[in-house]
Amino acid sequence: MLQVQNLTRRFGENTAVDNVSFAIPSGQMTGFVGANGAGKTTTMRMIMGVLTSHGGEVLVDGRPITADDRSTFGYMPEERGLYPKQPILDQLVYLGQLHRMTASDARSQAQDLLDRFQLGGRGKDKLESLSLGNQQRVQIAASLLHRPTVLILDEPFSGLDPVAVDSMVELLRDRTADGVPVLFSSHQLDLVDRLCDNLVVLRQGRLVASGSGDDLRAKAPRRHRLSVDPDAGWVREEAGVRVIDVAGQDAVVEFDDDDAAQRVLASALTRGSVHEFSRIRPSLSEIYREVSQ
Ligand SMILES: Nc1ncnc2c1ncn2[C@@H]1O[C@H](COP(=O)(O)OP(=O)(O)OP(=O)(O)O)[C@@H](O)[C@H]1O
Image (cartoon, rainbow, N blue to C red; front, side, top):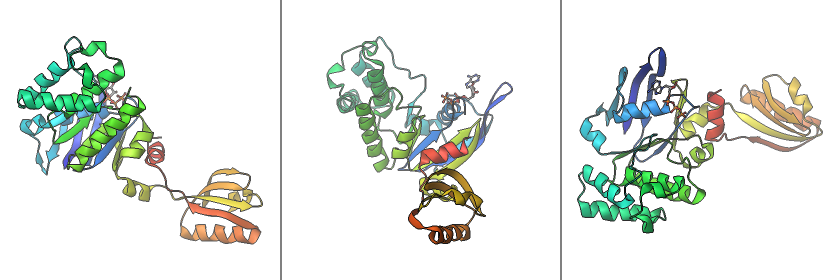
């Protein structure tokens, strides 16, 4: 388990990350979301030690992180970082050796990862000769090569086509099944919904939500869908109800409490037919939109 505790980083007058704390549990996928400039990359850089913090710390299994810990992590930085003019396989092998792999282990592991990304035949090509999406696949392979104990990935899905996204999802699921904690940032909320066990949301450098999907859903407003005959307009006049949307016979509402919900249901039944009265389970992307406004 990796923990970020009260991390803070300033750039001049701008506090880019402000007293941020959250956990990245082992064997789980944690999505890191927030608008442009919210502080995700800065936080990841502090976790990896490529940027010093102005306060707070990073803990591994409850103790302060060390350089040795970090050397076992897989990191995909925002600025990427492979050499455009070098053959792909050679540089992956070199990177593996920097992580203390033998050349033959690094070569077979790199070939395996390239195969999984449908790049098995491109090992001798220079990185720059690949399309941007394929270069991105190689960057991902580089971060996974040395069988990392923790994965910190800055927008790993950006620029990938749907097939590459699926390969990436499969690779990450393999890692979490082995107990690896994964933190990845993304603006693709559909993917965050599909993949994440946990969500961490930053807004202007501050943490506005964190936790498991179920925890966050439990804290989210309790919305219901109501479909009645005749029209649902009367629901606007009911006490303890906030109307999110009404269109003809359909309404989406938030109740203050269960009593309000039961009152509205009873009222609907006295007015006509009730076709639907159901709780809406918010998606993680809806929760994100709610807390980041
Ligand atoms: N090296 C730097 N020098 C000055 N300001 C910086 C530096 N790096 C980041 N910042 C500022 O810190 C804030 C957070 O930036 P950061 O890159 O961490 O956000 P982000 O959430 O990763 O954004 P994005 O989604 O656009 O990648 C921004 O206001 C940014 O301008």
